[in-house]
Length: 89
Image (tube, rainbow, N blue to C red; front, side):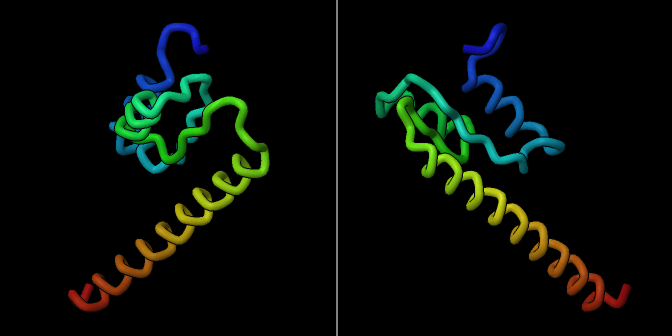
């Protein structure tokens, strides 16, 4: 538990701000019901792991989320450069 805000609220706040919306969020929680998982994911969580999660799964999800963000950033830079080149800037 976090004082003052629920994890869902923190997730929604981070994902609604363009300065932080790219940060991968993995919710680690005791709330394991399908309804809770759907709520967490609908608030922007990239992954939702209920207790007792498998440590290897957590690290694999972290690695894959970081890799996907790096690939996205690399592709975004490539697209921006191509767009500038095509537009003659």
